[in-house]
Length: 164
Image (cartoon, rainbow, N blue to C red):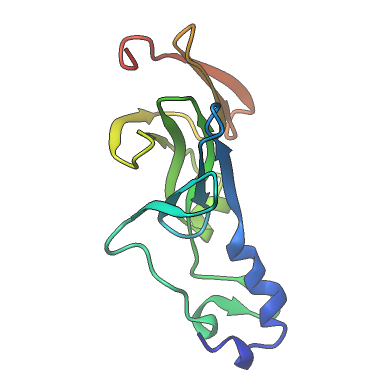
C-alpha cells in the first residue's frame, strides 16, 4: 500500500517481484518460489493455482512507506526463497529467512533446503551449514549440489537415503 506516496516507488518496489520458477519434468505443473515473500505457489500447466504455501505470520504485504528509502532503495524487507530445482516427485527450495541487512552482511550464514511434493506438502527439511545461493539435484545418483556464496565454492550432499 501507499506506493503512490513514495517518490520513484514503482521502480523501487519491482525488486520485490523476484521469483524462482521451476517446471515439473513431465510439464504438468509449475512452481513459483518468491524471494521476498514467504510463499511458494504450485500451478497446473494451464496456469491455474493448485496450492499456495505461506507462513501464517511471515507472509505479508509490504507497506511502501515503511520499506522504501528513495535514496537507498529497499529497507525492512525479508529474503525467503532463493532458488529451486525440481524432479518429477519433489520440489527442492533453498530457503533463508533473512533481513536485508543480514543478506548483505559478511557474517557466515546457513541455509535450509525445503523439499515439497507436487501437492505442496512438506516432505524433507535439509539444514545446511553453508550459505547456498543455488542448487541442482541429481535424483539418479542421489546428490544435491549447491553453491556456497560465503566461501565461493561448490558443495555436494548425498541425499540418496532420504529421497528413496
